[in-house]
View 1 (cartoon, one colour):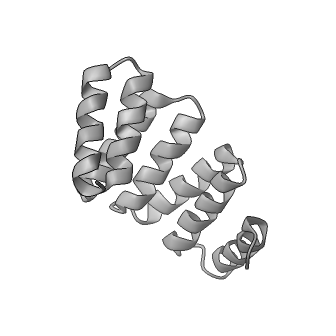
View 2: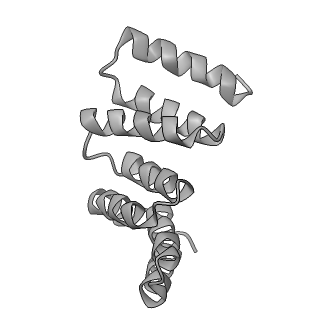
Length: 121
């Protein structure tokens, strides 16, 4: 299954079989993000969060999509939710730092990047 487009079909089939399978929605969202179909990816991640609202990885992926959609303020909230469930998630700390920097919060961004370094030196 070397191409993201190939994987997309598998996740769509998994969702067709079990629309309550949160991880399939999450994985489909990741593939769509990789295909630069960010709006669709965000919709899939939102579906995953309806089914599994305490999944920090989904919140982090949602934040990444929001940054790509030029919504850094919303992304900060998503990364904070992800960190609520996994304080050691370097990707969430990094994403939060990027979003903070995009909103002009330089000092807070630096602090967030420093937290990321603790967990992924």
